[in-house]
Amino acid sequence: MRYPRFAYIPQPAFVNQQDDERVFIIARRHFVDFIGYAIIIFALLLVPILIVAIGYQGIGQAIATGGAIAYDILILVSAVYFMLLMVVAMTSWVGYYYNLLIVTDERIIEVAQKGFFSREMYELAFEQIEDVSYHTKGFLNTFFEVGDIEIQTAGTARNFYVRRIPYPQIVFRIIHDLARQARSGVKDNERMPESEIIGLIGSQPVLRGTKTPAIMNFGAGLSAHRDEYSQNLKRPKTLREKFDRWWWAHMKGEQLIYVNYEFEAERARKLKEARRQGQVSSDVSKK
Image (cartoon, helix red, strand yellow):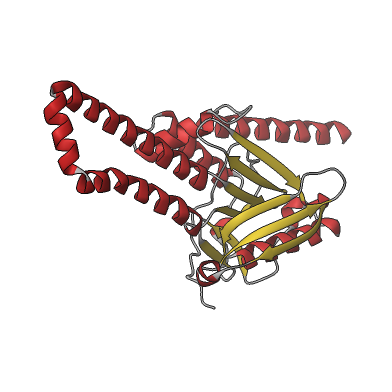
């Protein structure tokens, strides 16, 4: 199987990400999961058209008999129907698009979006993982390489079951490698998937093969990216930025934090300089 080589995908960031935390996977459900909702919404959209097409004579007579009141009632019912349909469509889209699976070198995070105003975040350390498996069933799922990931945990920790994500075999292999390394005592910042594919951002696999893959960037580079992301949300211009701002602002127990990266960088530089001077003074006093 051949995958497009996206070697320079920008380093992704998310709320409460640590500066030394590398992201290997940020994936949402495949569009196949939304096809069923789309068909239902499209069918509901056709219902008024079919009613008018089949019973236009009766509707015309009712309007002629009832006059302006009947016409106003028809307009009101149509408006309410299409508004409710729009709400259903938006709710279905939000539930599909903002269900996320995030895998870093430290943990697994699942964001479960339930409607507009309800969402839950679950976090799992690799040391808690006992078993990982994936399942692909059905023609569409097999054709589009879509499947489910099941993560069984130790003790009372919640099991993870992520539905219909792209390339489940890639996600399985990455989680399996990181969990095995964690159980072997490998430190967070030394963990790395062992296969050729070391990440999945959106639906694009990230391959090993560049000298410094973008997915490996962290520290100052990650802070700069997070700063740009947060500043865009502070003054959103596009519809996507406005929606992301609303979504993150309503996360349970989370608030948007806008970082002044230049200030933080200057503070870090001064702190480093102070530590260096303190070390020099300590060395001089020892002599």
